[in-house]
Length: 95
Image 1: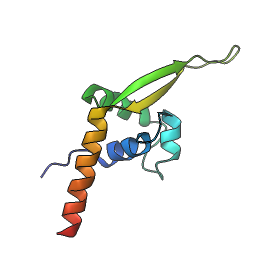
Image 2: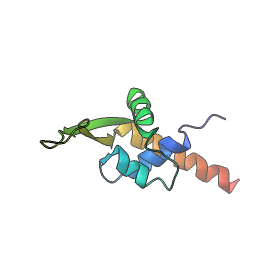
Image 3: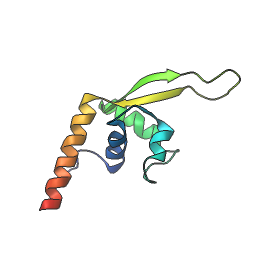
Image 4: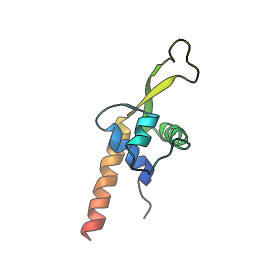
């Protein structure tokens, strides 16, 4: 049986259940599952699937270099997918 979400996707959505977060915040809260090198690729893939969306951007401060900071939030589809994934895991462990 194919899983609804990958472990990385479930980790991201679990963190986004309560509040939007920046990509590097998701890395910090992942317990080592996500890396700074892969989190934005993952978030892009999840956005294409409709699981997350970019909520807003914050431009870099004057004099700072680098890209804008983007907040990500779970969509309704993402939250439903997470609930289904967690229920499937619960049923699997109960046997």
